Amino acid sequence: MTISLRLPSRDDDARLVFDALTDMRAVLAVRPESPTVTMAQLYRLATDPQHDDAALEVQLAENPALRVRFQTLLERTALYALPKLAAASSREVTTREGRGYRIRLQPSQAESTQTYIIFEFDDTAQTAPRTVFVCRADRAPLRHRLPDAIGGVVQLLVDSESDLLRGLRDLDAEVFLR
Image (cartoon, rainbow, N blue to C red; front, side, top):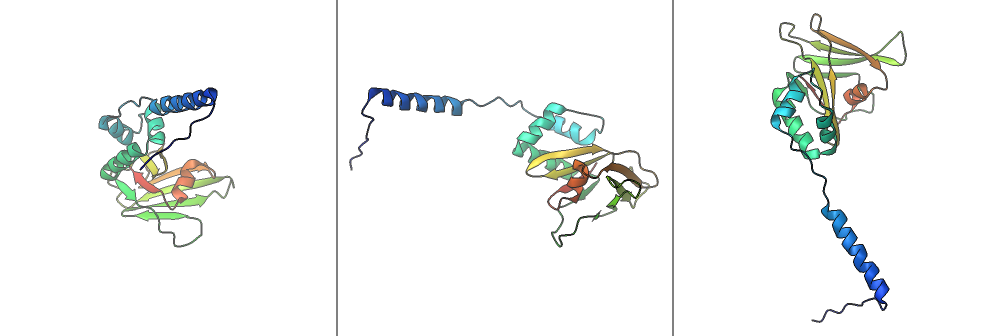
């Protein structure tokens, strides 16, 4: 078997092709260094509602494998977890229910651009969650601090276009309360 290559007839064309290939190899070889993320950093972000780590949140947004690790940690440490919703209808999601709690999304009657997010917990003796996480495999997890529960109820008033509200309505999102 004979392999034949057809080379450019002019030396300048050959140099251009060679230079382009060399440049492409150099571009492909450069990989930005990604700092190592420890489980302790992920655990602190998952469990400490007062802790903010912007650099870690950027890494979670950019690294799908890191998101999987973080979501696995949330699954194991969450007080309450809600899996993805079944796409049973095309109606807007107004309630999500899990074992021992429910989330209601109720438009404000006073202001049409706002919506109440109401977390109701059956066990009022248990410590109420302090943080809600909304996770999807294809984007960064959304984290929102919760106010103190009163009588097993946590209530938020948010803009009707907020990321949190969109996430809670998303059929493909999993919700974790920690």
